[in-house]
Image 1 (tube, rainbow, N blue to C red):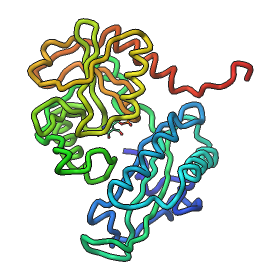
Image 2 (cartoon, rainbow, N blue to C red):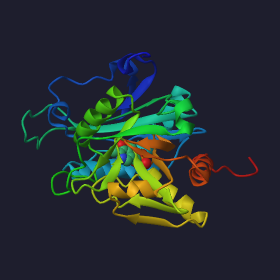
Image 3 (cartoon, rainbow, N blue to C red):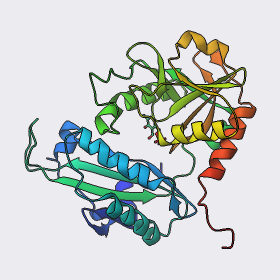
Length: 295
Ligand SMILES: Cc1ncc(COP(=O)(O)O)c(C=O)c1O
């Protein structure tokens, strides 16, 4: 365990200005804390630039809209704040966490008059999974909880409330020695890991579940584009757990996880192979800033 996250040094952008890290606080009677009226993003900077920053910022604003609130800053302002924050912190490769939440004016289910707060923090955060385990392929357990029906929860929002079952599932998996858990959806179809989307490879074809009740990750969309650029076939479709025995490779992907091979899901076994390796390489090239050749 390193320094707790509220005790680190530097600045955090909060509601329009930079404040010292340790002063970026909220009151205990904050609606976002009690009622999960909070949305967030997870971004990674490579070589001093956040990969697909605008897409993340737009998703933050859209997540707020889905929860019924307007993020009170434009995408331009939030992007500029992010870039300035990275410069101030002196970070080249870093993780960036914007968050927007309802404040304290009203404390009940209804919070029509609450101010919307926004903060952006950044820290150095290398590999999401143990680097040694990572290339061998991580081990996933099956999660007890399922991704909810979009009629039950706003599944297109990156909303704090949707992570409740992710933390429960990840803790249960870790307690059994697994790195993470595979969540099915409410229909029993393969959905995603607790913080990343999932892909399989069988007979040279890539298969990934339709993101109809979970986040259509920015990394997921990038990986699909990279695979197609290589001429690989990608099928987005419903995948049932019984099909997993027919796949040879498996990997998960997300901003934090990047492209991480999977070796086991419960009793199913996979071997990180050529397609996974190629996509790890392609993704790592793609995230580097595209600077002018002359530079
Ligand atoms: C539950 C969940 N699914 C998928 C993803 C992947 O999304 P992205 O690639 O946009 O980071 C994430 C990470 O943000 C996540 O938390």
